[in-house]
Length: 574
Image 1 (cartoon, rainbow, N blue to C red):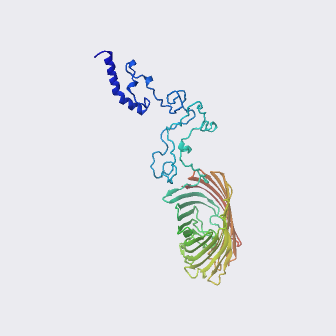
Image 2: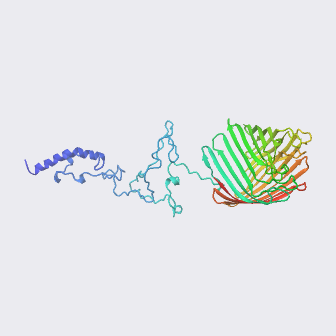
Image 3: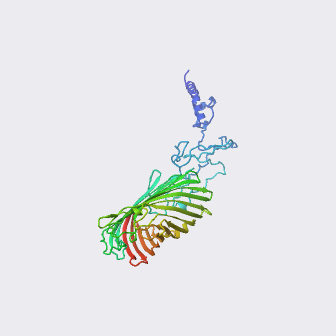
């Protein structure tokens, strides 16, 4: 058969063969509704083709259905507007730290460990990632365009560059950003870390003029220079501690001073160059939370002070003495009660004196070894007030039984004092104590040396730019004067620091004290007024100027002195 009927049958057979493919497309939901085509859907009047009106398509932009809608189009409404995107901040890319592992920490310092959930506990919902569509808008007469809302008020965001979410701290789950600590000393040395130690170093190079470097009755001036290195290392450990503080200087003078014609004791050496070094290394071993083993190793290198009666006549240069010692003890805490005890050992050795005639004089009679012990009991009344009681005893044994004048200098003595340490709102901090010191000598011709002991170290922060300090010390020193037991030395210092700018600091200092030569009748008073100006160019480079005036007032005629020191230098630190 041929004709129109044959053509129609061929087209019907082709459509029947395509029915399975059309059914799969309809199930996927991309072109047609979820229904199966049947031969009844063919329209013979239109040449056997299926009309688009006969296959209604599903709109993917709207999934809301209304079962009560009698239109039969499954509740779809063509007049429903899409959600407004005005005022919405678009999100691009992937969330921060999305590629991190399930353990450890991610780039936002968040832990990646999965939380442990109790039985029946709801699992936390993950935060929506970028590209997540907004919740659907309900259809119907009540649906309307959402109001325009900005995430940031215009008054805060106007003329401001937007920050990345990671910098602004708005990333979901990111911990709050820590506020940076205010630097109390913006021009102070930063230091370097070497392993578990913070190391700071510095050196000061200065030059100036001293109107009386030998501190003689008849002044004679000289230019001088000073090289003063410093080294500080502090451990940064969770337990235990170790601190090394080393400071030294060398003062050199450009002139030489010939010996005086009368050869008086107060005459200065011909060469006034002298070193000075003070260093200590402190350690603490934390056995338990309340038990600590403490130790200290100390070293002192210096000379007799210019103008001291211990200086021999006809010296070519000052003899150098070295004191090496240590303290080893234990600290034990019983709640608020703290008990500390330790033993001390010190060894002092003098070099031989070089005289102007080329000969040398021995100072072995000045060498001695000191052994002693110290104990301290303190109780913390409040976190800001901690009174204490301290006692010390020692014995000094000289290398030679008799000194150059035939006196036996071996002795024993100590001190006892009481005081308190305090800290009031960090405005007034420090420690102050008072007591009594005494020393008895083997030689019966030497009287007991005794006197009031005052020790303090106070810091008062008057304003953020002004700081006042007060500190005092008391010591019992050896002497070579015949018939004199020793020297009881009291020293008091008041200091005020003021920052005119953070980079410009002025320092005023006043020191006074007394030297009591018990057994000789000599009594000296000394005073010193000093003004410093420091210009801090950078953290590593400072410029420092010093002007100082020293006085020594003695009750013995011919021993009073005065001197003015002017100095300018730089400080290099790291």
